[in-house]
Image 1: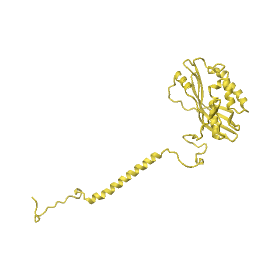
Image 2: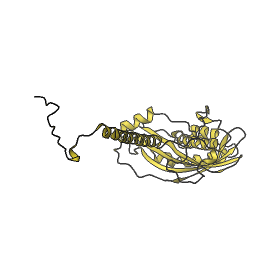
Image 3: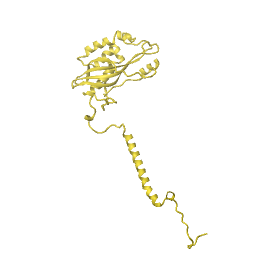
Image 4: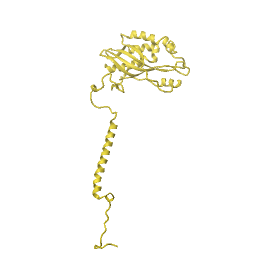
Amino acid sequence: MPLSDDQPHTRTRLPVDEQPSTPATLRQSRPLRTLLTVLVVVTLLVVAISIANRGKPATGGSSSDHAAPGAVSGAGPAPSGDQPVGTTVNGIASGFPHSDQGAQSAAANYSVAIGSADMFRTDSRHTIIATIADPGAAGALQSRLDQGFGGDTAARYGLDAQGRAPKGLTFVSRTVPVGTKSTNYNDGDAKVEVWCTGLTGLAGERSVQPVTTNWFTLALSLHWTGSDWKLTDFTSRQGPAPMPGDQQAATAEEITGAAQQFGGFRYAR
């Protein structure tokens, strides 16, 4: 029954904490919520940008901004933008640039040639030496390498006097450059060290000389002939060798197939 205007009204006052929120209070809370939302969004954007930029190389700057020689770097020397040479002589890369990087590229390719199976055969060995050696040093290099790859060395790997493997077996000898380092350079001469890993042995089911790996460093002396870098001398030392990995050795059939199916490379810094 509705109350008349002259009937007394009863008012109940709730405690402050229990009073319903007024529209003014709601209006005051909305800006605070909006501010918190904006702060959260900005924080997330900053984190996302930091993650996206992590690991990106710095842009700009000249070559003088790069680390000085000998500086420690986890990635090691960076490859240059120079393209590998496009010409060959007797299957060996040639026509290297007259520059420090050209000398390093020549040294890497010559290391591959010196460590190839062709060096164990007299005719192909002489062809390699004539291709990569400076004319003034070719005679001495040929005499030295004839002693190093012929006779007892070939027999030690189970090869005959002509450097041929026994029937049914494949002789494997490959040098794979891992990196190069110029130790001395001028317009006429260069000395380059090439860190290498190598494969050597006889692949096949009856092999008593299984293919094994080796780590070594070649130090090559090169001379600019006026049109290309040519070898004048080289030395070899063992290592540095990394810790062997926990990896199962391939079967004789797998190694034979890999040696016959996978070709080598031309190298450029």
